[in-house]
Image 1 (cartoon, rainbow, N blue to C red):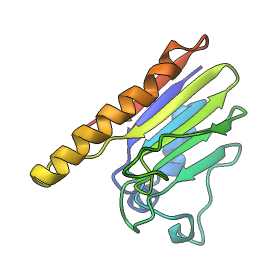
Image 2: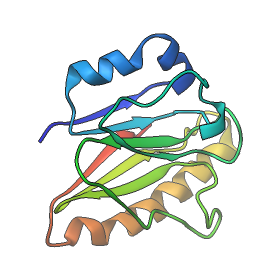
Image 3: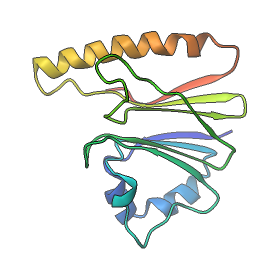
Image 4: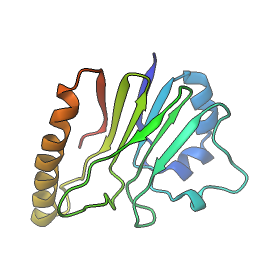
Length: 151
């Protein structure tokens, strides 16, 4: 099984640069993208995801901000993702959990703490909660892979 993770730094820009051809070339069974920064309705109208790929997009509520997506040529189910007290619905679109047969993939785009002390404190609280949420997944009796931009 071939797994690929990539911070695309904006999916619309990656589309303009030919990401669909790249997706076909790499032949990933599961491709996990971070920092997609796009809502489904913002994708170019004349563009579509590569044929044969199931796609799950988990955008931030805020347009042009964070977001993750997982594409797969394998059967995939979306599992309950990460939510915590300060952000019970993951409004920043930071974690997408998918299952591909026995394999569970945790596609993550951690917050950046570079916006000053308040944002750094938020990142540290987020990471503490994320690690606690992640622990049972890692202790489960099936393979789990955690990928992404872990800042």
